[in-house]
Length: 212
Image (cartoon, rainbow, N blue to C red):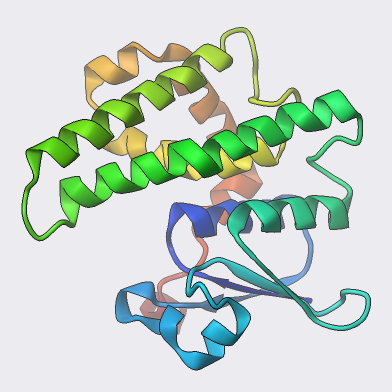
């Protein structure tokens, strides 16, 4: 059994989608980051960086094994399940390149744009313009990549799972002109979003009140 520590964020939902796709048995343990639960000693013992998601694989060889960082978790689960990460060197590299694109660029920029647009205690026009402009540029890179392709790295893979929750969140905030300029990305978003495992993964974790 895998213990899955998470909250309702794009980084958390990458992993819930992967767990649903692979059908590996898991137990969800919500970590309410709005209330600072990620900084409790028990959680910091798993991840000293105080960030979700974290998994603890209770079936790992040698005993329970904790994995932090969403990209590393996706790779670990792909290798454990033998799915969604090719073994062929070139095909594997294609997937990992676009996984790293999400980890190093798309996620951080969209996260900063969302923060300065909706959460910052004061409105800072320069920061908003900087991060929104870069976010749109990166979404455009994805749109270009998806021209003539169904998925980012060849077949459906952990690169798509990592990217989907971030793009889905940004798409809700995006303007009609931006969406119209990125038809390939919109097509990919709808296609991936139709997968039953993606739909299930996007609901994890359930709100505590509704789950009680």
